[in-house]
Amino acid sequence: MAKKEADFDLYIHGLLKEVGIEATAQGSTVPEINDALKTASKRQTGKVGFPEFVAVVKDYVLVFEDKPDRSFLCLKENDEISLSVVATEKYAVNGALFFAKKILANTSFKKVFAFGNAGDSKHHTLQPLFVNVDGYTELPEVETFENFSTQNIDEYYKRAVLGEIPPSDIELQDILKKAKNLHEHLRNYGSLGEDEKPLVVSAILLALREQEHGFKLQDLTGDDLEGATDGAKLYTRLENNLKRAKVKPEVNKERVLDQFALIKNRPKLNTVHDVLKKTPLKFYAEYINEHIFKAVISLSVEDYLGRFYGEFVSYSGGDGQSLGVVLTPSHITELFCDLVDLKVDDVIFDPCCGTGGFLVAGMTRMLMQASSDAGKDRIKEKQIYGVEDRDDMFAIATTNMILRGDGKSNLLCGDFFAQDPSKSQLNGITVGFMNPPYSQAKDKGTAHLSELCFIRHLLNSVTKGGRVAVIVPISTMIGKTKEDKAIKKELLKNHTLEGVLSLNKNTFYRVGTVPCIAVFRAGKKHPQDKLVKFINFEDDGFEVKKHLGLVETERAKDRKSYMLSCWRGEIVDVPSKFMVQTKIKDTDEWIHSFYYYNDEIPSEQDFMKSIADYLTFEFGMVTSGREYLFEEGDGDA
Image (tube, rainbow, N blue to C red; front, side, top):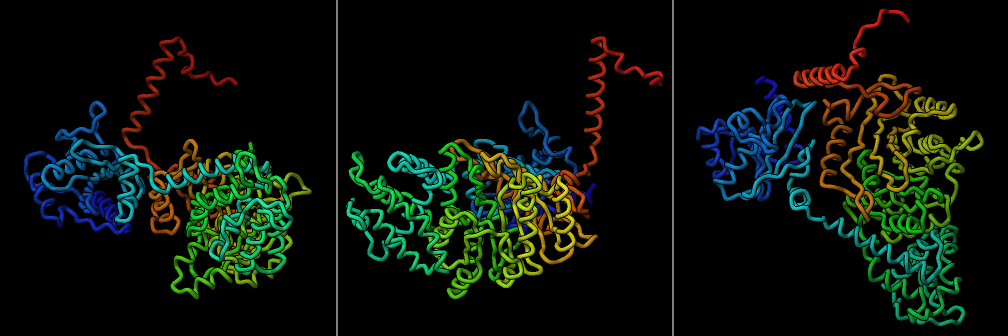
């Protein structure tokens, strides 16, 4: 028992070190805490008693009590955590709460996080409490101590304990409110269609960038003279901005301008409105400049233009699927960067770039790593490639990159399948990100448009050894059709599957697609003895909230940190319900549920409970006259 507890203590200490928490074993380096523990015997004799670990992070005390058996996690009496001698001595949560109260009563500290940890390195429960003079609050279980690190603990306290809405959520709420208002204005005053609204917004955003070069909103006077309308003036300004951004080749610039031509060609947008007393275009420009412009151009991974696109579509009664659009949330585009361990010298390619969400996330991550202006310029000019088939989405993606300070991305409007993979490799692409169009392969005639065909073409477009991450419906990795099975076989012959993550069913909120992320290594045959990681990441700490959609909760950092530690091999003894590492065949279903097995041995208490439940059931059946259910047959068929 002692060895098991010592091993578990080492595991807990390792988790603390991973997030930079300096913890002291069997005491504290803070004199007043150490003095408080001198009378903190868990037997409540008034003698000395020490928890497994104590740490101080900012003005919070963290106290840890470990037990090697999950049966001794917590003892409650009348739904309250017991502080009886038996409870504090034998149970982890109870002991941690006891120590926390001693520290609060005998030191100047006012806030304590107490952790009752029970189990072993593979199967365990880490249960935090927040404790102050008013009592305790039970918090959601954790897998890591990421939320309690110096950089995260204040935010966690505000969210989990005080219930405050974080600034990022408030900003998102505000942006979505503005998007809703703007949608109403675009519809009511401009009679714009759902796919026209984001184009008008994008055009105005580009024109507003010319405020640095003499453009003023007062220049929009509602003139009806041809060439002098508000739309013509905005168009000229955005055209200048495209030139200033040095969008190349010329055909790309012309494609974008063609999409934005509606602002000068649509009479209703350029006619003074009776109620507004100005043209709708001037009204939109003023609204966007005041409420939206700064957020969109911020150095953030959030694809705000993509957000607007999705919101406009939803308000118009659709979900984007009818348009072939399933936009990727920013927490997923960030996760892609983590899964492939994106480096400053990588070259990114997204062949279905949509509004540019992956390119924005990848560029932002690499720019944060760059140590010089020359390095940042190189990233913008030579390390970002994208293809988009739809003209309107291409215009939005181009706008997105320009607004982020990058008009030099190598974006192409065209069919990805028409691109020669060998020529793409010449660009030195080391990382491929993709969210391909879903469910386009309806029959044999369209089988070449399946998600697996997109994956194969992308893998063939990346340099040998390059990393590719894709988000696709989970059915893609199952491979039901004859054509899909053949492609899966081909993929293993030419490339390596690193792993697959099953995702939250609400990742694409309002779309109804259950997705997964697959990560490959390009150009290297899959070794037969390769252990592939299959992770159940359905519980990712994101939840659907009214009026906001899918949002991050205080659990998200912990869940992501744990998952990435498993993914990188930093935690190897992982419960199979979360991750299975196994050899694979092309005929397998490449998802966690296919390989999952229950590796958890039931405890004696679990066994006895099952027996008791069965006996209760049998007794109920017998007393209700159904004893025949338990009679043995005579063997006849």
